[in-house]
Length: 200
Image (cartoon, rainbow, N blue to C red; front, side, top):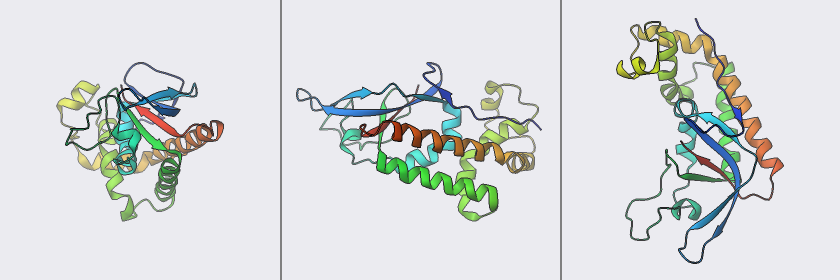
């Protein structure tokens, strides 16, 4: 069975990664959107890892009423579509308070995975994580293209669950490193008002 580390890159990776910055926002009086000032402190996480391990939390804690999220670059007051988490080349803003609540919940899941793996509270998050473990558990899938063509279905589904259980330490390790790094980012930049997250 292959083992792996879910990577958190310090700085900016311009390829298929999400980027995290502390930021301050100032309303532009001319067009009523916010000008974004990003701080230099930055990390990058690959989008597949976002999808399988973090999107569950990003979607839950995304504030659709937060003015920063409502009035982004594409803002049109006549739009009937509410703000939502954007995957590609658009900022998603989380206040420090919301981010701390999210990190606390991630810590809780990491604890449960480590000490009570079969707790039903983890079932929904495991569904998000499953495609990742499906991929690494299926020896016949040799690259991402084949993985996608197979529709995320392993030849032997039980192997995927076994793989997740055996390798859950990789997810626990990632969650602990992620929450520690984001807390450091907020502590090191107390004058910023949000964490800005943008996809590739």
